[in-house]
Image (cartoon, rainbow, N blue to C red; front, side):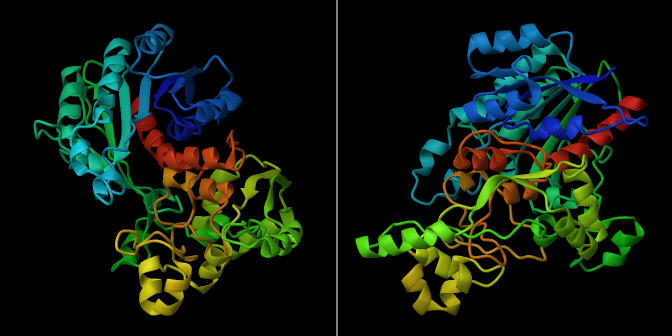
Length: 439
């Protein structure tokens, strides 16, 4: 019998997907999604495509009728509640960074209290385990009374009868997705609560499977069985080359006519193509054990296709800039190296947008993927092609399996991908919890 999960603030379902991918010794799924709750229409379309209508509750968790529906359909059936509580007001790269914003209004933000609705549902349903994911900014954010949000959150759940303390006495973990084979440096706070009345055990630590080979003592990690980080090249290097079409922004009518003719000949990708098996096998033979293990996760079931590998259109000036930038370079460093060209190609103030452009490094994990991809991909410039990431490249960077299809227009696919918990990191959390359950 499978262990039932409720996924609150589910997004596209990355957190629960990691749980669903855990198998027992006979190869049977251990966990099963019972309900996923999400407010975003396109994410709900993605969830429905995977799970059917019955398992998806679309709506605002703060509304009484939605909360009641969740409790009515889940009480007495749920063993684990998971949730990536919306984190815009905790994020250190959004409003709290202070650029162009009135910081005062972010000291008190109603989104800070969304966890209370999560808490109330947990109080009604009484699962044995809860798993909460959030950005690191939650550790420093304070409410209007100067009390730390994280302390309030933990205290509230402790009052409901949950223990968060692990073997080292900590009540939360900061996990880096790269340490679990995700080709992306992405630090997140993970809280795991176990109901005291169910099991009086310490919360298990989530042990890394990978390490940064550039560290001072790599041999120590290797001797402990850890693998080096998965790189951008390893994760996306098998995907076919695509080129951006050119937008008409700032062009004369004569230039537009020329571009129109050129655009017809440009291959900017298709939403579904058949996997080139030969190309894929060649790539597998070139990459490390880390990369091969990664594909064991994202291409685990022999899926025959590549979906969503289409590139955005770009302005000519951006395409030229992308060609000129070096791997790992941001707008700031490019401007220092080539001030003459920066003045020509960069249209943003470098006082407040130092990393508005960033070219990723092929041999390193990607920088943190986020929902701003919905607006533009300028911080995710392909290491060797003059364009930004495709949705499939972003999904690979987040460790979504290739068979995972996102619904909606390209911008909404990017939003779902950027907001997600990497399934491979979630899978490692779920595997560790399964060990507790087996005991």
